[in-house]
Image (cartoon, rainbow, N blue to C red; front, side, top):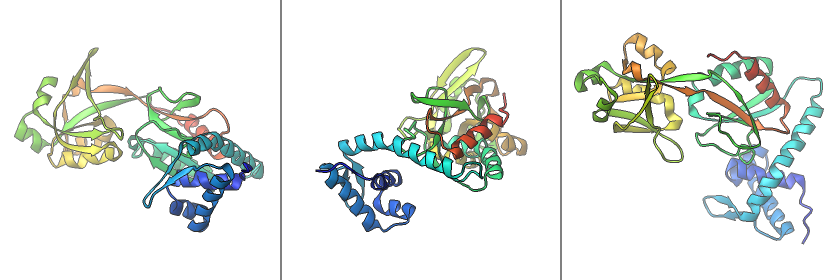
Length: 302
């Protein structure tokens, strides 16, 4: 058995894991799918152990494969970052920036940041993966992630992006309130229909209301449950009269102004902590460092 697996072969394995399959990896790498399969088989032969369990529909890392990816992934990222930095020393920043973000930042927080980034660094390709659960961004092949709250993975640096506080608000269409009545106190919501969101891991996003230091959780009647990845699509269903929606207040301002939606229990709207950009403490490539600078230079709303 020889264990001198080449860095190029390991990069192919990481692409299979990151892209979710041989065909997707071959498209990303620009090589034949058969060559990707041959490369993985060569790694397994050289190491003397399987690294992938293959079925007709999917591939999954074995325990040995997971150990290999966890150990090698950060090292190859560091090598690639170092080579890229040297190649572009003193020149225009080039390459790729990959972000793993929740759907909540897609409509309004991320666009102005990426627009500014694109203006300053037009040669960088940006790719965004939308997920809600906290993920290991290194194992996922991403440069950085964005999540709500300050509790993030260990060994990560985090900086605030977007507003430091965001208000959660409730709203419904005039037709819905005409038909079902206007809630006067939080307890009234238990008799109302609601448009809810479910996290990727399974639980529903809670309805937590606050007023003058008092916090109350309510459980309305679920009329429609959407994936949290479709967070900003719920407004359409609320406008159609399907129920009360609980979402970011800034997403509702246009609907309030047009009259398509009406505020519900505004005295009980709660505040939540804003999102954070998080990334490994070492080996930040130039495209990521440039994005960090954009985030730090962009004034955050209070």
